[in-house]
Image (cartoon, rainbow, N blue to C red; front, side, top):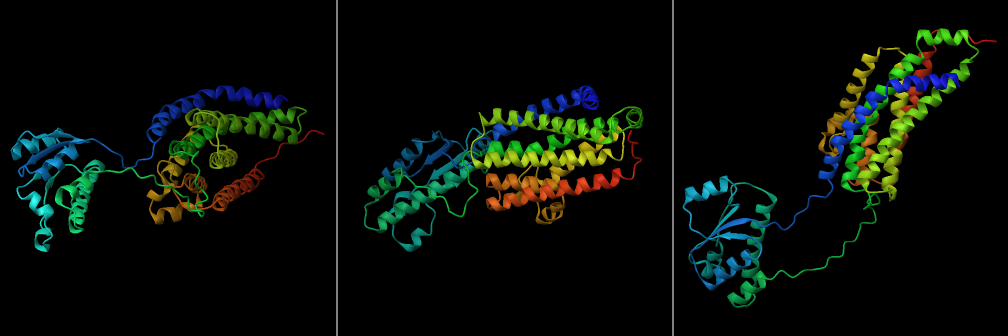
Length: 390
C-alpha cells in the first residue's frame, strides 16, 4: 500500500486550501440559509398611520377604532409638507383622510354616489404592508356597502365589516403534487443549491494537484523501478481519490445536518443527499479527466474557480432556475450543473415535476460521469504507458 500512503502524504499538503474553502463556505452559508428559513407570506404588520377624521361621525369613528386595534395611529394634524417629511423619514407609513360626507357616502345606495371614493389614501413607499392596508380599506368599504344594500342599517353594516372571524381552512394537497415534502425546507434547499459551487472548488483544488503529482514524470519513473504493478498503482490511486472525495462530501453533508437541525428526514431530503453525491462523483471524474492533461497547479485552481462560478451563475447555483431566462436554461442543459440544480428545484417545489423527473436528472448526471470516464481513458492512452515489471 505504498502508493496509497504516498497519496495521503500528498493530500496532507493540500489540506490547507480545503479547510479555507470549507470555513469560508459555512461562514457565508449559515447566514444565507438562515435568512431564507421561513417562506415569505403576507402577515399582519402594524403600521404607523396618520388619520385625519374630517367627518367626525359615528361611522368614521368606528373605522378609526377598527384601525387602532391593529395599527399605531397619529391623529395630530399635519400640513402637507410635514406629512411628506414624516413619510420620507418613515415616521408615517400610511396617510388616510376621512372627508366630510363619509357616512352619507358609505350608507348611500345611489349609483352616482357609489362612484365617488369615500376615503383619501396616500403612501410614499410600496410594500406588502401598505398593499395589505389598501386591500383592507377596499374590502371594508365594499362589505359595508353590500350589507347596506341587503337591508342592514349603516352601523350594523359597519360592525359586520369590522369583525374579523377566524376561519379554519383545511389545506388539501393536490394528488398530482408528488414532490411536496414539508421536511425539505426552504433553507435546506438553499444549502444544496449553494453546495454545487463548493464541491467543485474544493474537490478540484485538492484532488487535481494530487493526481497531477501522482501522475508526474518522477512518480512514473519510481513505478518503473519498483515492484508495483500498474494495475495495483491505478487501484490504489483510485481508492485514495474515492476516499478523499467521500470525505469532502461527508463533511459538507454533516454541516448541512447542523443547519437542518438533526438527521435528515423525508424522501426529498434524502434524494437531495443522493443528488449531491452523484454530482460530487461527476466533479471527481471531471477532475481526473483534467489531470490527464497534466496542467500546473495554478491552472487547476483557475479552472476550479471558472467552472465553479460559471456553472453556479449559469445553472442556478446562486438563484432558483425559474429566475433564469428560457434561452439560458435551454443552453445550460448541456451542463451537468443544470441537472443538479433542476433536481434540487424539483425537490423543494420551485419547479413542478414528479419523482420520475428527479431520477431523469440523476441519470443525466450519470451520463456525464460515463462520458468523462470514456474521455479519460482515451486521453490517458495517448500518454506513454508505464512498463510493467515481470
